[in-house]
Amino acid sequence: MMKYDMKRFLLLVLCLLALPTVTPAQPQADEVLGVARLANDYFMKKYEDPTVPTNWKRVRPSSLWTRAVYYEGLMALQAIDPQQRYIDYARTWADFHQWTPRNGVQTCDADDQCCAQTYVELLQYLPGAGIDKLNNVRANLDHQMATANPKNQSLYGWWTWIDAIQMAMPLYMQMAKLTGEAKYCDHAMKMYRWSRNECGGGLFNVKEGLWWRDADYVPPYKEPDGQQCYWSRGNGWVYAALVRCMELLPPKSKEYKELKKDFLLMSEGLLRCQREDGFWNPSLVSTNYAMPETSGTALFLYGMAWGIEQGYLKAADYRPACDRAWTAMATKAVHPDGFLGWMQGTGKDPSAGQPLSYTRIPDFEDYGTGCFLLGATEYYKLLKE
Image: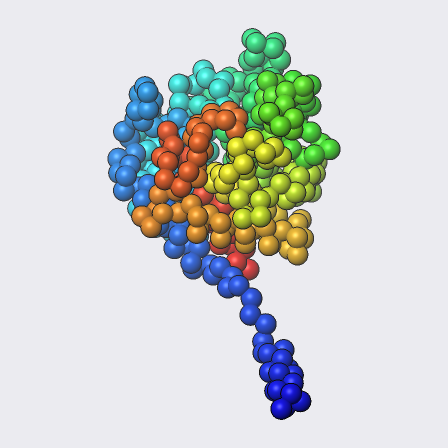
């Protein structure tokens, strides 16, 4: 009887071993697009009139940076999911603000210039529209290029916080490509290098591939656990900006190669920081505020997916990180109606808007949706390859 039972047991084991290995289902491109539409539809329904100003603590025009980032995401969605209503929504917004940077031609604040990135992208959808529609944008950049920052006396010292690199640097590259004038690219690169190498002694830690947000956070500043303070979304801004700029530059140009080098350093640094659940913390290497955060995660997904598509990042290393990031956001941040949870509010470091949660509504919802759409659309393209 014992021998018979043992034979049956061994037969069962052999049968189980012969069964095909079951692996977790991978996200499908159409599913990703569906979630992106859900998040965007939630936003467009809630903010039906794009001309209405925001009103959090004080009234701000809808051309402010938070809304401008949303439109970056919307234009990315339009590229993979063309719908006239997306263009109409963005066109109404641009027309209302007269295709002009927030606070006018004389501003040198990168946050004011961010909206112009979408103005440039909209031209392709407006038959007969020419570069003259961007006269105010061009005048604004020309003004900044001739104006030193009075706070540091540097002609290139305007981007004193790393968010600014995303807000304005791609615009300079857009204008360089649109006009054929290298001066815009040259000036942007000099401002980038100033932030990277000079501001606060240099905001980019090459050894770790991560950025300090501004001069207030470079060493000896530390998080409560003694670790460096690398803000997730701040690093996400730079990572996204590198992608957006490289897409506009000739791959063989020295500028492209310079940005690509930093992109690869950042990719390595960010990969080391990903949480087991697929998110990244608000503070990348610190245990302080250890929790999911959606905006940074979305921007890292955006960059990593793009890097894989270009052949710059090894799919064997980075594709699992992308899959985990998307699954984490889709299952733990996206609500059934499209609202995005675990989204950090505006601020400048990991402490802003705490505590985060699945249900907490951030002070501004627009930039978070934009970040999410950037990540979702690039991941969609990766899955479609």
